[in-house]
Length: 471
Image (cartoon, rainbow, N blue to C red; front, side, top):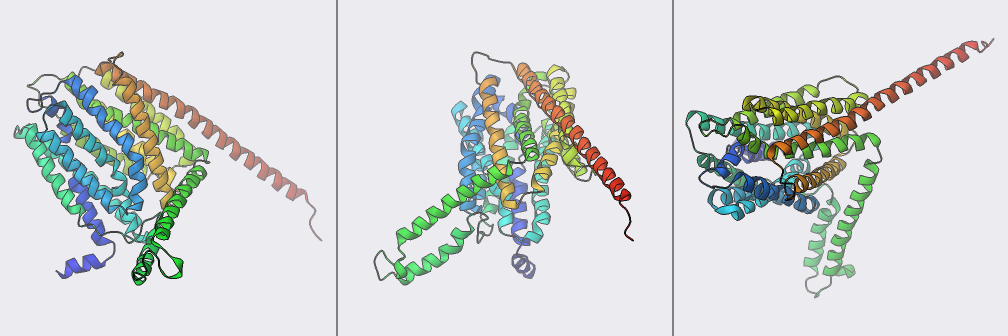
């Protein structure tokens, strides 16, 4: 009991522990790597066409519609309600998946899943509002690593149960909903932040306003010094408008940097392509290996890809390189690797080659998004980082919605899954060309600048040498 009390009094350890537990169980979803076989299996009995064109696009569109409203209210509500919403969204999604019959119920499940993914901003921002600045790096590592661990454990557990014990996909989803229920209950144990990061003035003044209103309750509708209930509401409204104006101003100022625009562009375009490839890869795997006697290794592949991506992200964080010079060229080169991996996934007839290409693709993406993240974040305050993260994510989801509408939902095209992946490979090839060109230009430009500086320094030294010495 003393240890628990000390934990709660620490100021940072208790919320970090609770949020880490929440993140672990929220991400431990052993049924997710086998979602397509589950939906097309005997329990749901949907066709591949229904899953690809009617079910999965619902997540893309709902995430796009909800992202901006959730982003705007997250800080105003002080994060915890949004985390609770995320946990409940996941639970409702799996309830529909397990017990809802037909396409409509499955679409409701994907809509609820979209609500949960849109609320991720609350999970990744909450901890900064309850701990001190000196703990930021430590608590970020704890929260992100436990979420990654939960995802890996879920994928490995699902694969072991399917491969060794021949457990049905239905049972995997029962385990998933049990894990999500634990996460949802845990979210209620999070301490409520005393203030937000952006609406600090609003929360700071709310207590004083309430006290004034209570002291003057004998006068109907008014308070001392002429302060009324309507005045309190107007103040809150004015603060909200001030924050929105500040966000717009900060956004304009941040994107005045050409380098930040470049890394943000890859973030948005790369994330769009990654989600599109990852969302439909199970359908591609089913097409490559349609035999019912084949044991799917989706969970194992996802776990290996995640761990390889984590290792690549860790390694790139320790590479000594002037990323401001070479970063864009690196984005272009690894985008070529992404394009090649997706093209090979499309062309090969071997499921194991397809699996291996996905591991390369996902690990490469995680490495590149890490480069973009620290290049964007290194010169921004935490409030502006959240803003740029939100803007980039919104652009990525908007691009994904457009790509989905054209490639998946255009009835006149009616593209096969193979043609879809050829388009995705071409999409990354275009990204590679853009950033190879930009990267080469940046390297040449920076070398010319350094050469001019060295010439100027040399000329200055010669001129100083020619000056007569003072006698």
